[in-house]
Image 1: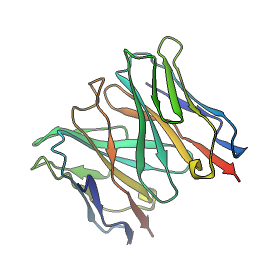
Image 2: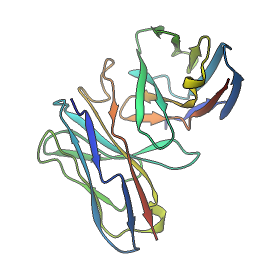
Image 3: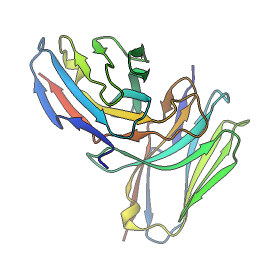
Image 4: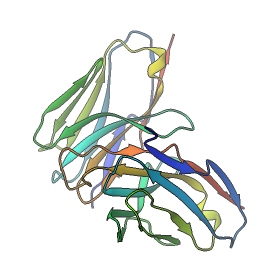
Length: 109
Length: 116
């Protein structure tokens, strides 16, 4: 059974800092990995989708990497802003989507 | 373009009551799914559908029913609500299903359900 873990569960950083969120999964047989953002009381917004044949994807200040063999993905956020404060979830896709519990990020002004 | 629309946004039920959570998407996606989100546990798959007339169980299907009569709609029915079903429910859709590398999932805004 696929298990997805996100570390840390919560992270607080000052504005402007570069940061890395981690996602690990136990079964490397995946089709893709997706990073989502969730604001309090809201739904999930897709940030980046990495196909299993890809190593990384970039969108603006966000860069996500995927290492299938080691079962790891990272989400790098450059020059963090208070507006980046949210919960970030990763999900791996195979027969279904398996989610991690998320990392709650707070960026302090 | 509305995307994925869920109704209602909030609901309080008494134990034993039944209700239907509605989900509709206007993107002509074949794959639709329902998740529940509980604190500290991430999202867990309840049921999913790969197309009209086809549904299957996910990780936590007990106490829930689904049907898919059209591509656009995928309602989730709670047969006899229990306090353990207190959760936030999300509906999602994607064009190709999870068995495709380039499929991106789109989520509704969620339904917050409380069973007392």
